[in-house]
Amino acid sequence: MVVDFHLHVPEGWVREGVPPREAAERLVEFMDGAGIDVGVVLPVAPYVPNDYVYRLVSYEPGRLVGFASVVPNPADVAVRELRRAVEDLGLRGLKLHPGMQGFCLRHPHVVRVVRCAGELGVPVVVHAMLGDLSTLYFKSGGHALPSPDRLEDYEWLPVLAPGTRIVYAHMGGLFGFREFMAIAAGHPNVYLDTSYSLVTVVGRLVLRGFRCM
Image 1: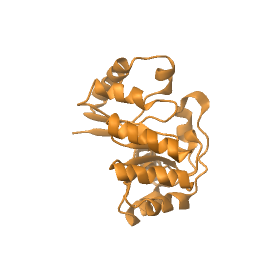
Image 2 (image 1 turned 90 degrees about the horizontal axis):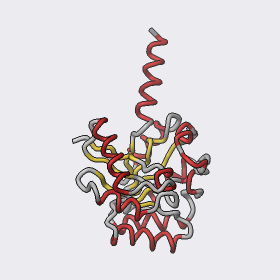
Image 3 (image 1 turned 180 degrees about the vertical axis):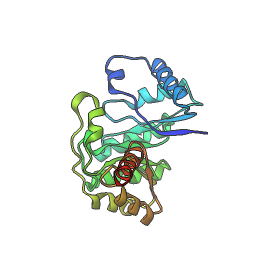
Image 4 (image 1 turned 60 degrees about the vertical axis):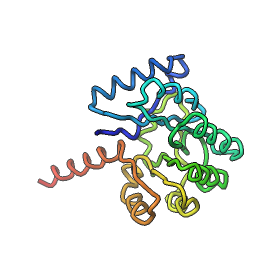
């Protein structure tokens, strides 16, 4: 079975009023063309609502798994919405994006939300592209900004939320993959999502190899 752990619903689909059923059909069509059996849908709040993801995945429950997203500050509001998304809607995880949602991982409100996800038994996927702005070109609406986080923030988060499974998306990016591999090796609750970065890193290594020949 091939699982794509990092699928996005384009914000434009929501803005243009694409029905959830049609959105599900589009995603599955893409998956079929790429040989993907199951896709994990990662929204970014507030641009893609949790209710939209819930309705989308309900049309293809065997092919699509939906995650929730919340803006983690203020924490009271974020925790309430996260609990609703997981307990009432049945969404299976949490997606956070510091650059698009405008927060720092070291903020106490963020830590509280991440801990809540652990209490609910769901993983947290955190966009992590250390010093690599290349994926910003793929973000619609001009919302993406350079992440204010530092490497030590990513190192501290699994310590501050030891009961939460944390997935660092893009394994730190082209300029941070070594550091994030070290973080994952040192913390049993940290995993790495290799989307984008693995292909890019391998491509760079291959190019260097050709240059050396």
